[in-house]
Length: 107
View 1 (cartoon, helix red, strand yellow):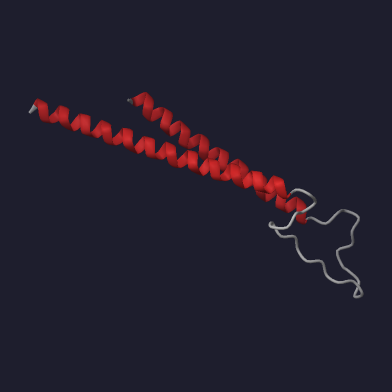
View 2 (cartoon, helix red, strand yellow; view 1 turned 90 degrees about the horizontal axis):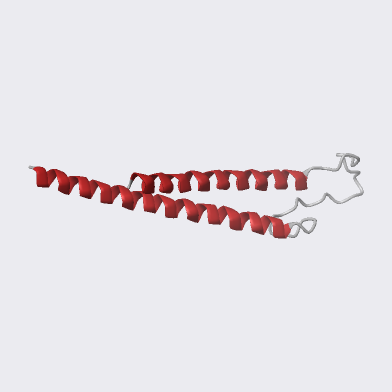
């Protein structure tokens, strides 16, 4: 039973790390997409229309599929964490019940 608890907690830690890594990738990708190229002046002339900021819904440099994949991976990590947490909770409840019945039998 202790091994099962260890496996469940390991699943939770793994999912948490995966979610954190994917979140960092999403933020890094967004920052890279919004960065100005090195040779582009930051101040636009008055004759040019200001550019609208890119949206995560619109394809950005053909990388919209990457963002979708990252969101899917983040959701998978969330579901993995929830499943591991549920397993951990069930095992802990079973252990408490078994220990409770053992103590009751001893008295």
